[in-house]
Image 1 (cartoon, rainbow, N blue to C red):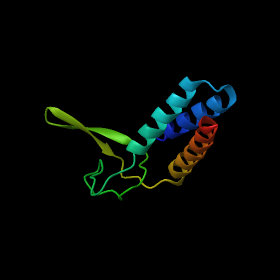
Image 2: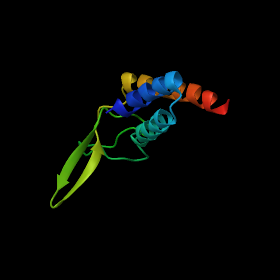
Image 3: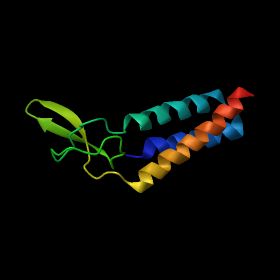
Length: 102
């Protein structure tokens, strides 16, 4: 879900208050995970239909195909709340980077 961008933002706020480098590293890790949730080119959704390129799905679903499993994005995209949450995480990261630079 969008929780990685939300958690990234939370760790960013913690870092901005405490200056703890561990909070900064967690902020970056969760931000990177949030970026990995953006759909790629010609990606197939959990319903077997193509999802929009570079969008944020509601969730990723585990699909079982015979003996193997794979993750597929929910066809419910794009969602404004997931885009807004990623933007807030980006803004928090920008602030943290400015603190790191000083």
